[in-house]
Image (cartoon, rainbow, N blue to C red):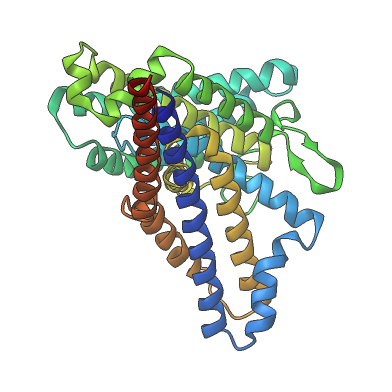
Length: 371
């Protein structure tokens, strides 16, 4: 039993090492790319590394950008855990932001913030559950590919959100397409003074705690992880694999809806999204970085936010296109998602530990026989 715990500890440590090594290699490749394509590589590399920390505003921007990454990452952890890559979170995020803005503007300042904010978060969660239900039920009843269905549905839902904005929410007194200014009762206040970090980070961290408890301290979390790891075995021992994967997708959808609502209340004065934000897919990247572990999601989200802000800094202060960050993200996914990356080192460590345990057992048996 003791040996088994040690091998589990080695596996856990090596997973963290794999993630950190993947990030480090991708970061090193980013620096190499900057060195090769920039006319002033020393300045650009310095800006990429230190630029995100060069002012309180930029530090605050990293935290604020990490908020939707964290929430969408948690959302995708539920999908990833049951191996159902329901990518509807992309449009859930957009439509939830649209609907809660519509409701918030209609209500106005008639409700205090302590009532308004939870109400809108619940509405966002309901939007998420309803939308996540569609690809989930089509997968369950019609055996439709959940990835294909959710990707196609994203386009439909995005157009629905744009239609609502244009014809039911648009403020005609301004020269661009946006809603009326959202009431103060739904604008989350900033915290930490000059850093101007929105209090949406508190909502994100609460979701991390709740998701971690669900994953690792409840029977549902254990069943969910077992269904994802070995669905045949889970079915053989009597678990409802379809029901568990269905519930996980709905939970993931609810969290994505909370993410869209939080982002509007945390970072915007008006709703003005005329296209999907990409945060749903960012959530998938963060979930991959975290190896579907909610506890590690904030680390992956902060790293992604840091390199995004760094890319923005070198784009505005130098000659580097912002799109180079796509290359870095691709490398991160390849290294972290590849099961064989550093697997040899992990297997050697586990083998050595097993050998030590076997030698100890033989030594104890020899002592007993000598007695």
